[in-house]
Amino acid sequence: PPLGEKIWDPALIFSEERAGKAIAYFDPLSAAGPDGIRPIMLQKGWDFLGKALTSIARASYTLAAIPACWKNSTGIFIPKPGKDDYYNPKSYRTITLSAVPLKFVERL
Image (cartoon, rainbow, N blue to C red; front, side, top):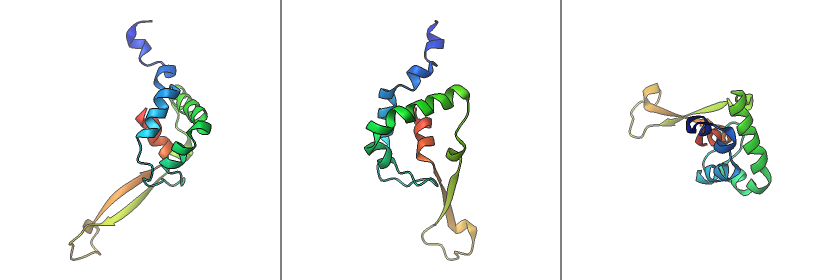
């Protein structure tokens, strides 16, 4: 096949080697999403989970579908320092905690 077609091959994009590098990239102690899974859990259990998680990621890509439980996220409001009125919504910034497996697939 032409080179352009080969670079989108799910077997290349979602190889176990590439997936292992992607999961190793994450800060092990970063916050978990609503599913409670932290990066360290996947990193330490990679020898047992790697093949399955890579297969799920490949299937998600191939079927153009994201598992429903990965679509959930949690919004956290963090107060901005030095504000006079914390009843004002502008006194906060928001962060969104997404599922680590979703972030893993995005990294691939």
